[in-house]
Length: 404
Image (cartoon, rainbow, N blue to C red; front, side, top):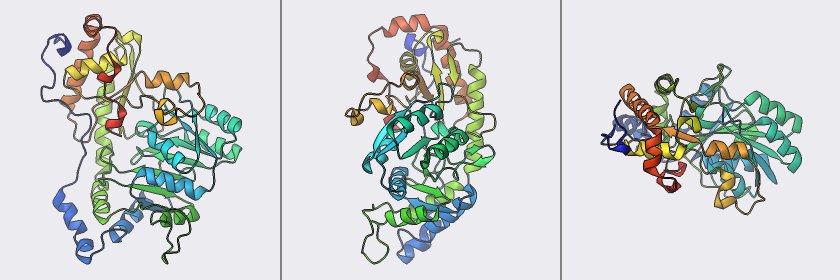
């Protein structure tokens, strides 16, 4: 076994292995798709956007899909469409945009616990917080490209008579009980930013079976203007350009192959690390299909090093990693004004997770090299701990803000 680079051995990736890399469609194909719109002078909200919306509605098995400029604006407009809400229950183990969308609507986030094995929002804890705070809605996130506990959340929302929205930023290509994620809750909102499986450059979609909600989002993405400049409400400029729609359409054609490739690499990671103590992957139900937008591990003391030390040792190997989602959102400065909330499971999860390189054209040999690096780091854990020292700053590790 090679000596880890942090102890003087050669790095596994002298030229670095990136954490993520967009699987971009060929530029000439995109140009040909966008050319008719470009030559007609239709640069936004045009026929390519309508084609994308119709194609995704069919794929997601929903009545309506509305293209928007980002998942965040989609969440903002979805909450606007639901109506005046004071408080929204949501996981703290999520990307900050989940909470930001509620805050921009004048809502107060109420943060709930996650499950320690799946890292998805805990439906029982969420229900308790809906009841305790009189919350008017629930947002659940499909974390790391695996479905949230949809059935339990749906039943909870029905009992509490609150609308349920899914932040499905990671969700294209994911299935729950054989059904594509997209048609659950009152709406599901997806991202097509560069780190996602379907890439539009920047962009998002709102999927729903509620015609009124879809129409409000449609108007809201164009300032709330019904077409006569007499705006019905304070909307946004959240339109999707024809270029972004063209890129998304071409990218969408390869989604099934992209999901299969990521699942194969995730299985290879898991197989290589199955006998290593103190490290485990995030649990996914056997009946669900995860797209592995991220491949995330959780470390405990049995590994011999904590998450931060592992990240430092992998960085020495030239392997980029991310701490999704550290710090958890209830610890962000943006929400320091809210009453303190005790979320021990979330805090533990945020302090133990490390996401490894995962992208569409990741090679099996790269995965094997990352696994070998982790095996060597585990075998030399005591020496690495002494080398790093007890007072290393957490700033040595990249946070989730660098790729979402």
